[in-house]
Structure formats: structure tokens, C-alpha cells
Image (cartoon, rainbow, N blue to C red; front, side, top):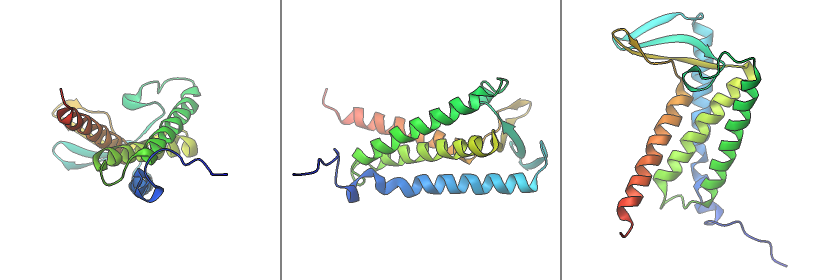
Length: 171
């Protein structure tokens, strides 16, 4: 009797080879957040560049503080959503060939790492630590963190991979 092998390349060649990037994003995100929380008071601001400040803020909502004013149920919804999305992305990574689909694998690993980094904040603290604050004159972008940056870069790589793939498809 044979055991059914999951679809995709052999495990050693699969996109799971990119999971250390996911772990690195989670580790860097949590380390930097812990440093900021330890060294900054709430809303304490340090000007780094004319367009960049470091500032300790907390977000109980999602991107751009969406649902931040809700009664607390959003914490568990966002934890569940981050966990579900990460499981799907990691399963998708398993089906990829690590060497041939590097861009896609890197994108998925970054997004999963960012989602899990922010999920850990919600799980452990009930809110996400944000600290990077970009602005131009009187125009301010909402504060963000390492996990948010990884998700953004991962999404950009996902779009780049899709664009490259579409250019190589026969018409």
C-alpha cells in the first residue's frame, strides 16, 4: 500500500525552502516592535528625516485603522483571517518549485510573515504596534511597521510575478 504524495515538487525542492524568510520577517518585526515599545513612550516622536519619523502608536484595527473603534470583536476576526490566509499561503508555497518560481515564493513568504507578525501582536497584546510614520509637509500616511512593509513588498512582488507571467503566455 502506497501513501499518497501531496501535489507539487519534492519537499526539498518546494517553496517551503522560502519559509526561513517568513520566520525572518516575523523575528525582525517582533524584535523591532519590542525595541520601540521599550524605548518610546506612547506618541513619542523622533524625527529621522524631513519626511520620516519614528513614533509609538497602537492599532486595534486593520490597515489605516479600519474598525479600530469597534468593540473588540475585530481582534479575533483579524487573528482568524491572518491565520487562515497564512495557512493558504504556506500550502501554496508547498506546491511551488523553489528555484523556478522564486519571485512568487518570495512574495508569498513575505506576505505570510507579515500577516503572522501582526497576528502575534493581536494575540499577545490585543493590538498592533506601529512606529514608522511617513509624511510630506502637512500630509501624513498612517503609521506602519516591519510586518506591514513585508506585506506591501510581498504584494508588489506578487503583482510583478503576475505581470511577468502574463508577458510569457502565448496570445
